[in-house]
Every structure is written in C-alpha cells, then in structure tokens.
Amino acid sequence: MDKIKNLPSNKIICIKHNASKTDCLNAISATDFSEYHTNIFLVPKKIEILSLPPQYRLVFYPIKYLDFNKIIKSVYRQTSKSYKNLHLISGSILVNKANNKKIFMTETEMKILTILFDKRIVKKDLLRQSILNFQPGVETKSLESHFSRIRKKIYEIDGAIDIVSKNSIFIAIQ
Image (tube, rainbow, N blue to C red; front, side, top):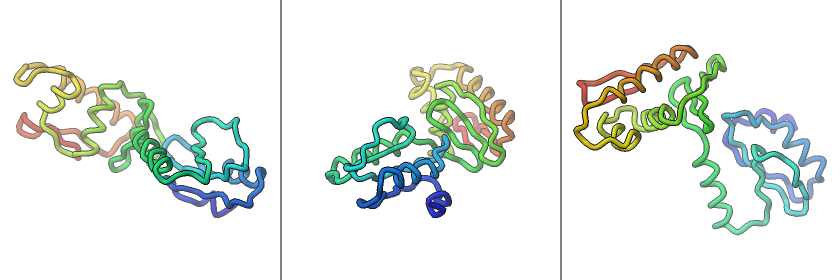
C-alpha cells in the first residue's frame, strides 16, 4: 500500500488478478486522485466496483488491446497542460503547483494558454482566427484584452511566467 501512495502522477496501476475487492478498494483510496493527477487503475473484471466517481479511472481487464488503447488516449487527451509552475486543469482552472493557488479561467483564456503552453511562441493571427474566429487582417484589441486578463490572473496566483508580445506579430510565453 505504501508503494502506491508514493507513486507519481500519470501512472497505470495494475491490481493483481488474485486481489480481493477490499485490497483493490484500499489501493484506490490510498492513491492521489487530485485534480492534476491522472492515475488509471487496471482492475480484474471479477472485482465488481460500480459505485466509484469518474475521477477514479478504472479499466477492467482482460480487455482487447485496441479498446485499452482508445481508453488511454481519451483519458490523456482530457488531462491538463503544464508550463513551468503553472498547470491548466480541464474544467477551467489554472493552478500554481508551487503554492497550490488556483484561479478560474474563461474558456477563451484556457484555449489561449493551452496553445501557448504547447507551442511557447505563436502568431497572433493564428489565435485571432482559431480562437476568436476573426478573419485574417481584422484589426481588433480583443486578443490584447485577453492577454491582459490572463497576465493578471497569472500574477494573482504568483505564477512565474510572463506573456510577451514579440514585434506585434507573435506572442510568447516565458
């Protein structure tokens, strides 16, 4: 049980086929299922566990490889993005992992940060088109307003990153 408590996040944990339901439930309850951990339990089908909330990601085996692969891909697609000490959680929450401060982000702010966390530097026109649905060449301060609000929220949770304009064409996170 202590081995399970000390597991880092984003692991697949397999319960032995001869484990009892009690052992299985103890292992699950000993695992960190906080908002930014993505632990998945492989549980024998013979153990009937039906009443756990969805954050307890259970996959019952035996299972076909392709079915298992689909489940894993869908779970990791839903999970969050990180950059330095900041962590985006699906559900519109930005968390500073250093101090555990959290702040709500709008859907648009989440989309902008997700792209910035992935690419680090992005053309502003790409964000205008893909997130704000503006046509190329449309002049607006809307995107700059979103950047300003995002910067303020990062500051409120003591985030150690900044969003900066690069020659009015690009935006970067550093």
